[in-house]
Image 1 (tube, rainbow, N blue to C red):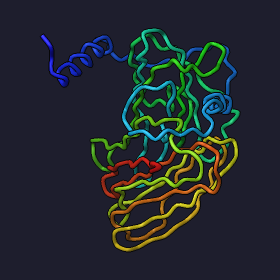
Image 2: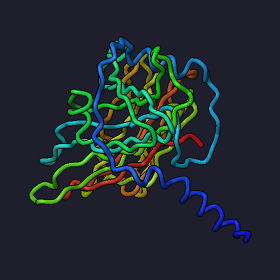
Image 3: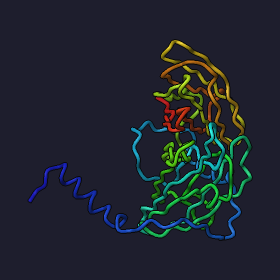
Length: 294
């Protein structure tokens, strides 16, 4: 019997997903394979062959050989919050996969920071609980670069990885938790000095908004950040981010209401990623807007 297109696609997806669905998530554990690869080495290997070829595609959640968690941490927040990052990494490949994770700490050049290697079983999901502390042995705020790698340390373009993270805290004065979702984004997210937009944010007496930028170039760069609010309040400011680093800053104080943000780098020729996050000043709950180049 010939199935209608929608049913045929659904049956194909279900059949393809069964091996993964049958696997219980396992804790992710590092391995000591003698690797001396640094975060700077890994970024260079990933971006060397890509150059400035940015492909405009619809933003969908899919597998890739490498990705970026643009914000993660084990860090004290405002209003009695303390944020930790949980998540999951999945190896969709029908073979074991060597993976490296590079911690990109905020405010410093991480070019010489060693990456942490992991070995993933075939078609297996792995849990990441407080992974900045437990998997990377780090603290503070930063970004995390995740890449399929070869035994030689080079990037493995055959990797089929997917990832998700959330940064969470106990709600101040309550027993529950609140969180911000940071799904994985492409290493090749934004390129050069074309502007990127983050929309649907809010900053007023009830909410606060922060802007985060990840610089994947070895040199520091400066972004002009423009804020345009529903109330008519507008402002702009600059953010300088060290090479192979990230930085998160609050937008200037003011009653903007619902707002959008535009980010424009000062020069061309490098890869970067950005986001903005709005948080409720009372509960600590919030949301994240990915900054995308049109």
